Every structure is written in structure tokens, then in C-alpha cells.
Figure 1 (spheres, rainbow, N blue to C red):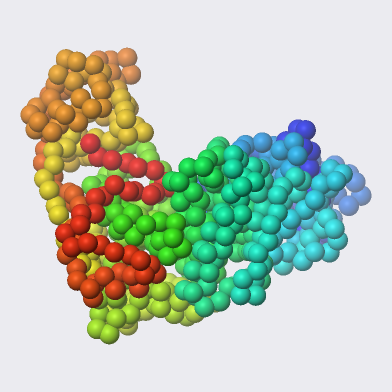
Figure 2: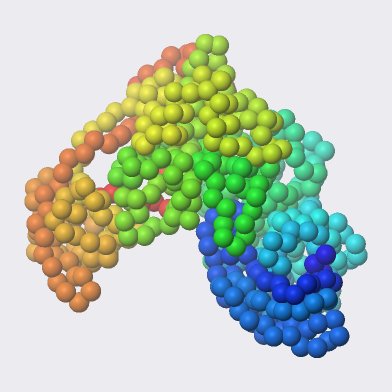
Length: 580
């Protein structure tokens, strides 16, 4: 067994860790993870560990040698005791993955605990906390004292966040399960609105239960923060860490986003935490595990994130449909859409939803394509005679493969047996290939495509003046525009985003001056016409309307004949990247 003693030092925003291993033979490599499920990217978690010492069973000091970016090699025989300290002060995404210590509380995760390479056996953690600190521990470990838990494996320890100190707590019961709500901090409106937010989350839980038929847990905890620096959204088998933002109670869009992130992470309790691509059933926390099915694991979850928001009343039916069209328009604008499959996107997970030079040409986000594949499958099933639903198929898929993981061949055979083989081959295994416009048409929406002029660039934060990406088969790339060029002048006048839009719409060559480093360059670029999905128009009858109402769980949903659905909404936590 690995036995840890973890002391929280709130003033220093650190933890002090002691690990005891009873039997070591010859040499041991102790490592912290460099890769964890849910993040799917390599992280230098080892950067935060320092003051690393070791001793044998007699208390004699041992030599410690760093090995790699996350390991320490120690040679000994018999009992081994190591001690180190770890900084736990980063409030951003890092804290979502490895925890944080504040002056009055601590969120602790196993990511900061070294373990012997290859070890995934039982672990015990004894916590030393400041006097008066209370504790909340989601399900996963077995409580052996007021401040100690045992875990059947390091993987379970890694999957079990531990909360101590000051926090608000509420609980609700539903279908035999208890849902806990731990608020690490507060925001404007908390006293008046937190109850309503909890009830909104419970509606999401009810919606999940309706899809899967039961809960896979007895206890589940939403660990929430309103800290604007904490862009959290990380799933665990029995809990989730979510960042709601400082205006979640007072801004309608922020409230919708809160419901969406809660829905997304709760669906993960089934999809990813229990229903896993085969590669995630064999975790390599150092070298990484690379699944080919994240288009289903994350893409289907993104789809149900939006669908549950509609079914629970947080999102309007029109906004849901608008999102479908907008996701399609944005994804198909990237040259990578025509080059990368959903499988390749999954296997290249470490490149996803990271904007980097050339990303628009090289990689697509498996969240985005997977979401649209889920929509296309659902629409196809509902248009069949007799109709079926993705809800039903997804539950069957979960029941079939949650126990042992699924392979790509498993998924292909499963969906082929439900009449989705051709769609699967085209949309999952092929490049491009989404049938979203056709599926929208089947539902009663008439898609309208229009020709628009484009320069083929993406501006940083959507405003510029810096260029964040360049479409490699567009006119700007052909002229020589590069990432990080700063737009200075347009036809001799200072850059302004509205001026740029005006000039592009005129479809005449534009004289553009840029600054590249300390060099000034000039280009003449002629915008090029491309075809994009512009809007949707409702042409369905009563049959189609009833189908939409059943699908969205909204008996009140209505679309008037000829009503236009503009593509105004693009609810995407990974940010908007619009080709100009």
C-alpha cells in the first residue's frame, strides 16, 4: 500500500506530503502524473514539487535523482519514506487538474501525490488540516477516520477530489441518489438565487435519469466556484469541478452556461467515467493514453449538454437549432474539416481546442464534430419509420460497453445494426461528410446557403488587430499574410474591424499594411467568395412540429410557417474562431 500524509499549509498555499512504502526492492521511480483523464494533454505537474527528500526504514537519508519532467529515482531496499512540498496556488485551469490551497480552504487531488511507476494498488491518505476546518469527500474512498480515507487504487484516488475548510453545502435526493452542492465561494445574488440554480441542476439530473434509466452512483457532488479565473469543467466518477463565473446569478447567458456545464459534466458520469474508449481502461499517467473514440465520449456529451439545457427550460428551442447551424458553419469553414477525421481528431487529443498557428488547417475539435455527428444520428433515427431516438441507442450502447470499454469496431458494428452504418462511415471514418443540412431539412427546416466574401484570416479574440490564424487555401495566405501579423492600415486608413468588414463586403482588392515584428509589410488582397450556411427557415407541418416537441421535451415549442431561425448562437466553451 502507498500511505500518504498530507498537511495543508494555507498561509504558504502549499501542501506537505509524506509517502511511506513498506517494501521497495533495489530502485524505485516515483512519479506524479503528467497526463490525466479529462484533460488529455501533457502537463508539467512535476514543476510544483520541491524540497524532495527520502530516507530508508532506519531513518538514513537516501539519494534522490530527478528523472524526466515528472519523476524522482531512489535506490534502496525495504521501507521507503519520502517527503516533499508542493505549491498549490494557481487559481486557473491548473487548479481544476491538481487542486488549490487558499487561506481558508483546500481542494486536493491525487495529481500532486507521487507514486511508484506502474503502481495502481491500494492507497491511504491521512489529512492534517487546520483546526476547525470541515471536510466534504465525494464517494470513491472508504472513510477510516475523521481525516483519513482508503482507496482501492491510485486511479480511484486520482478521481476523488477532497474539499476542506470554508464552503457552503446543500444536498438534494433524487431516485435514491444524493446530490451534494459544494460552493467554494460566493457571487452577487448567491443568497437569493443559489436555490434556483440548484433546482436547475436537479432538473438536469432528472433529464439524465430519463435517458439512462438509473444513476450509476449513490452520491454525487457538484463542486462549484464563481472565481472568474477558474475556467473549470472536469468530470469525476462521483463529482465534478465546475466554474460558473462571477455573474452566474445576474446574467442570463451566464446562467445558461452554468446549466450547460453542469449537464455536460454530469453526463460524463456515464459517458467517459464509466463508458470508456478501450484506451482509457488502461491508463498511462506518464506517457498518456490515446483513445480513438473521444468524438463519441466528448462530442455526444456536448450534444446532450445542449439538449438537456433545452429539455430543462434553460435554453430555448430556437437557440438550440441556431447552435446546430452555427456549429456546422464554423466547423466547415476550417480547411482541417476536409482533411481530418473524427478518429484522427480523437487520437490527436492534445491538439484539440487549442488555438495555435496553423491549427485551423491541421486539426478539428472532436467536441464539435462529435456533437454534430450525434445530432445527425438523432435526426436520422427520428425520421425513420418507425422512428427511434439517440436517447434509446445511447442507453443501449452504455449498457453494452460500460463494463469493459469500447473499440472503434464495437461502435461501428453497434451503429450499423441500427441503420446508421453509412452515416458512420461518412461522418466518423471519412473527412468532412457531415449531413447536418440534410438532417435539418428532414426535420422541417430549410437551410439557406449564401455566397460571402472572405479574406481567409482569423483575428485574435475576434477583434484583432492581430491575426491568430490564416486559412492556408485562402487569399490572405496566397498573398503572404502570417499569424501574429498586426493589421495597421486598410486602404491607407487605420485598421478598424467595421472598416474591414465593409471593405470585404465590397468584394474589391484591399490594400492592407501590417506590422510583422519590427517590419512593416504591405499586401493587396482580393476577397474570395465562399458558400456558407446563412439561416434556417421553418417549412415543417404539424407532424414535424410534434417530432421537434417530443425531441426537445418542450410541448410549448413552436415554429411558425416561414419563420426564420438566424444563426446567432454559438455556445461553445472552447471559444469562437471566426474566419473573416
